[in-house]
Length: 353
Image 1 (spheres, helix red, strand yellow):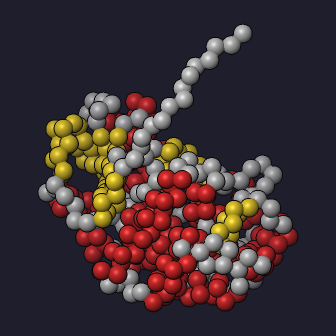
Image 2 (cartoon, helix red, strand yellow):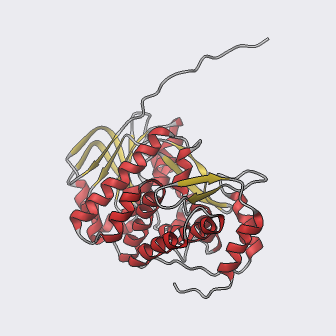
Image 3 (tube, helix red, strand yellow):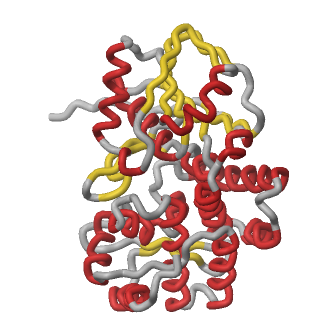
């Protein structure tokens, strides 16, 4: 005997990404802006001149990847309960990728889900983290291992916020732009090789192309059952680096940059990429002062940490490998000895960054 619950349905979670000066926006509900002290200190006044609501609250959480944890999520939720937010209420993520991920996750679980809006303030979050609905937090086992797919209602990308961005944060965002060009758009990569992203008009065009690239991928594979996993190029290696360094030595984009170099070497060894192409990617990353080397102290330990990656299974590690420039291969059939040879190469070099 069985009872069927017919839940087949089509849900339209489409939303717009606006790349321009932030417009005036009014929300006829309770709204909480979630930010950190650094971003709030620099830009909260500007945001408040643009945003109005029936009731408006500010929630600040500590700044840094190491605070992307359950304690910070609890802090956000407690504030929502104290101010009696309901299912019609809304959160605004106002900061970088850490703020966006945590705000999105908190909104996905508060009363089983409320709306949120992304207003990213770093280059990395503008071109990558704010787009696509991935939300979550870190724990002792690794990065983003707890989370949910929860799409924002809208994303507002205002280049104004980048005027105060430190050079390292800027470079971290460039790494994510390069990631998308290498895996999906050879002509975009060639544009980046000669472009000066310090020029505002050129940067805005790069942001547009990166966001369009990611939007196209997400539209085809929202919950990462296939193609979207390719956007994790550099992340399989990079997440282990972040875990080993306790999220304190490298910004996320910096770890991804090193991870891309490791993935490129793997591709070269497998015959998927020419050494000259790998060198071009490395040179582009170095152009924006991104680290491209890392010394692995424990090769076996590094390898075992791969299995904590969300894309891996009990017995196979999923690697995202570039195929030349503009192509990508998602595979769980990489020979362990080949991967260990790549890791041993990085255990024998001196760190340059």
